[in-house]
Length: 445
Ligand SMILES: NC(=O)C1=CN([C@@H]2O[C@H](COP(=O)(O)OP(=O)(O)OC[C@H]3O[C@@H](n4cnc5c(N)ncnc54)[C@H](O)[C@@H]3O)[C@@H](O)[C@H]2O)C=CC1
Ligand SMILES: [Mg+2]
Ligand SMILES: [Mg+2]
Ligand SMILES: [Mg+2]
Ligand SMILES: [Zn+2]
Image (cartoon, helix red, strand yellow):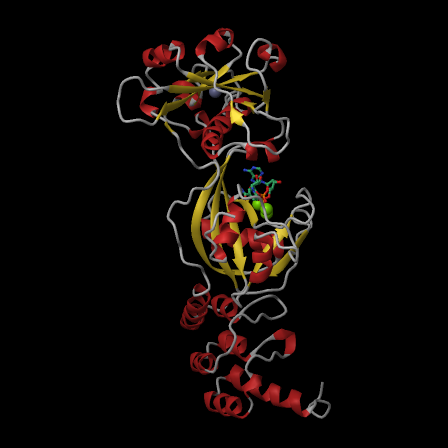
């Protein structure tokens, strides 16, 4: 476009951008004092004055632009901020200037850390795991036959529970069987047994031990002469969310270890058969000479998969980003989440998953709390973070929809107000806690 065709406005902007690009501090300052709205305007390919200064290493120009309140989160058509540009071209002093400013402002939006260890579903530990007893075969054998010992029964990873009603939502209790009731199972070589721990108590003597037993046999046969009103809880979600907080913690431990047994029957190193050791906490390869027998290998122990789950806050401090997967119940939106990949920090994983799933770029990240999630064995690492860009581009493979919701909309959903525009994740999910913590609501809703 020739300068003749340009409107006076375009021409003014072009002069301003040229001044920033060539490092003419005086001209930039003068033009801002005459027309402040030039600050965040963008020219060709969406480049702002700050990006051009960052591109060409003009520190003083960047400083003047920032001191006049220039927006550091603006992006060009390639989705780069001025900070990205400065980093790309190696102008570290400008990158430092941009990141310290941007980070400081954005960090102010993160909520206070709050309670160090909130009582989140699945996290309660009513047993002392006593891992030192896992190698004490004699002690374990004595506990196995002690009449008061508690046995929890699982079939296809579903716990045996009791309930007063047939209600689909009512809280259920774990069925605690005594050794007399599980004699047949204990001698069956197909039964997988895991020592869970002893009930927490002061005295050393008379410790009440708990075991989990997993059977492949027909559960209806097993139940014939046993507990009235007992059944295997069907479907991990939402079935497992019907347990009491005490029971949920025990199930988080038992189900994850049993799921590992069901998936790692053979040696992951050579494919040979394995034997169960250490009270159900180790599988050892039976083939002499297998590499897994030399040294310590994590393939022999139960696995835990770290998953980051994050509430992304809008740079305006008043919105948060929630998404929904196709499998969610209608109307429900929740925090974005994703598996941590090898070689990643939690912060990097948060930024990558948010970018992949929503197209939004994330700046500061703050860890809040975590949750055991035994489906089959995740550790949900709950974070708040602040976005530096706000345009949403959803990855349809993972997320059906993602939206910015206002603080008021989250409050309405939390109290189930009739104006609510979405449904909260259930109170048992850490996503619920991340949302509640952001709006500063500590009441147990
Ligand atoms: N407690 C809570 O509030 C919530 C818990 N979750 C849990 O977090 C888990 C991870 O979240 P997603 O969004 O699904 O993760 P994601 O965004 O990383 O995508 C999942 C995909 O990643 C791949 N993947 C990479 N590593 C994997 C691994 N170790 N195991 C299985 N798949 C792997 C698979 O292709 C899978 O389909 C979910 O499976 C869910 O159980 C998710 C949201 C809320
Ligand atoms: Mg993902
Ligand atoms: Mg995901
Ligand atoms: Mg992923
Ligand atoms: Zn092996």
